[in-house]
Structures are given as structure tokens and as C-alpha cells.
Length: 316
Image (cartoon, rainbow, N blue to C red):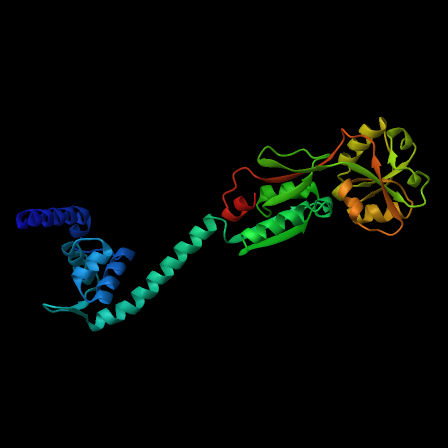
């Protein structure tokens, strides 16, 4: 049995010699984290055999690594006796710094791993007004925050065109964007966010307010208020042309949803809005369902095709 054991140790020495060959050419061993871990294990155990068992390596290999570290530092780290090893003055100084360095390394590793899993970091989200008013955005934020409470969420209300350019420029991560009138860049990933019927918002004293639903023929002669953030009114115009079968009469072009509803409530025109907006209480306004079931208001989530951030991928 002892012969086998001696051969086994011999092989370990040969392995270490090969592994450290390039270092020995320069008579130096570059200090690495593993050397500090070996040193701390011996210092804490006070015994090379127990430290080697803890580290899952053979004692001769551990002794060689400690000797190499001592050569690198130019000072003995342990006072060796037949029964125990004790720290030298240099060893006591190194132990404090080694423990601090290893703790920081472990913390860094944990941070990187948590970031890769999406547990920390930030997600910058742009949204159009109807994404908030439909409840889709708040629903997603609630679910994500419950699963990833340490991720920072940043919200910005932006027009669809600005969402796309900001995502491609890297200043935004995800956009909640209405589909109508949007042409999406091929570098973006488009995910379905939801579909809703269209309603027509109008003042409560409007002649059509007495009707339960509205057909296209009743709307042909009406004037409309359209959402046109940053001049992008083509989306709603396309929908209105489809509904009416002709060019719509436009009374106002405005930059946000609340202004659209305010003008409609004042009787300055009708507004085509996604059905969930009828939950929004605005004085002197009523909502009537558009009787065209095949037509829907669609919302999508847009993001970079080559996204690598863990938190953003977790949100998606």
C-alpha cells in the first residue's frame, strides 16, 4: 500500500512541476486568488494536512503552492513545527488583506452572477400614453417588481418614433408602442402586448351620445381630434380612413392622450381611443363602441434584438 501511495505522490509532484513550468522559468510565481485561498486555509486550520483536505488537494501540492507564494512575496508566511504551523509577522499582515481581498472577489462574483440572472441592474422603459391607460404597463411592472425587487425601473413617456430611436441609441431598453402608424426597424424585436376594440370619445351632449354603438356611416361627417405626438398622426389617420372609407376631417392634432380627451369633452371633435380608456373619468365625456369588430387597437413591446443585459432580458 505504501508503494502505491508513494507513486501517487510522485505523480502529483510531476503534475505540479508541469503546471508551474513557465513560472519556474522566471523563478517567480504570480500571486493569484487561488494562492490567497490556499494561504487562508492553512492559516485558519493551522495544519497543512487539514487545509489540504478542506481544499481537496494533496498536502505536497499545497506545500509547494505556499512556498511559491512566500518566494513571490519575499518573506516567510508560517513558522513551521513538527505539530503545527503558526503565522509569521508577515503572515499575520497578509491574512487580514487576503481575507479582505477574497471577500471582495466573492462579492464581485456574486454581483456579476446576479446581474446575469437579471436580479439586479436597471430597466429603462418608454411608453405611449395608452400603454399606461390600458393597464398593461402597470400590470407588467407589478409582476416584474414582485419577482425582481432589486432591479431599478425608470419610466419615460415618449412618442413611438422616439422610443425606437432611443432603444437603438442605447438610452432606452424597452418600449410600449401602439402599432397603428408605426414602421419598426429590423434591428428591433417586436412582442405582442395586447389588443383592444376602438371606442369613440365625445362630449356627453353630442347628438351621437344617445346611441349605444356607432357605425362608420354615422361618423363620416364628423370632425376628429387625433393623437399626433411629434407630428406622427399618420397612424390614427390610417385607422380613420379605414373606418370611414374616405379622408377624415381633422379638427385638432395634439401631443398627448389627456389633451385628446379634454378637447373631445369640450365638444371640439370626436376621438378614436382604445376601449380601456373608457375607464378614465373625464368630466363631460362619454365613450361609444365602434361597431367594427375586425378592427383593433394593438400594443407591442419593442426591444433590441441583440440585448445582453440580464435585467432587461428578465423583464422581456
